[in-house]
Image (cartoon, rainbow, N blue to C red; front, side, top):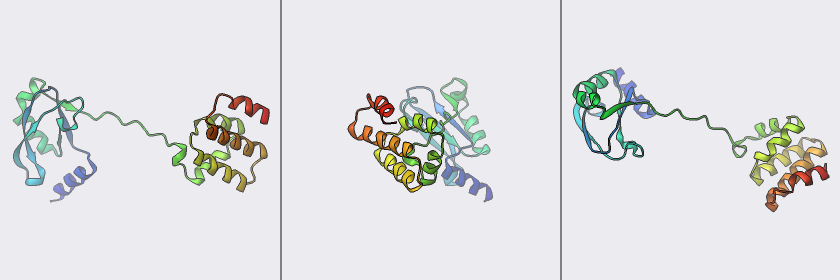
Length: 172
């Protein structure tokens, strides 16, 4: 029963023991053990384009299921109709300014002026700039920094970024 609990936990977290993908465009009927039905043998039909259809992947949840899968589908594995599959590595998502907390924005305001000036070009949201501006005023940041944030906010509101560097030089 403990083994079943681990399999069900893996199913919930979508971390299978192994995965196999159909490598052809045609239909393929495979034999698997169904962990939800007491490991009874069952069949599954894979169809569709393996490049775009996630239903062309078979997930195996334990070593016993994997051995059964390999024995019962030996022909498909040997001729390349079914291939072992590894998920593409997920790229680490870079947190945007819109997702930042007030503490993270406060840390942003503690950076060197030049660094902050360069990173401001990444901000495309007026709401984030309002938050930064309010934090800067509440923390009594230098007038030069407050002016920089106000200019960037005005640039976004006007929608004209071509003259921003010249306006910035004149203002500062």
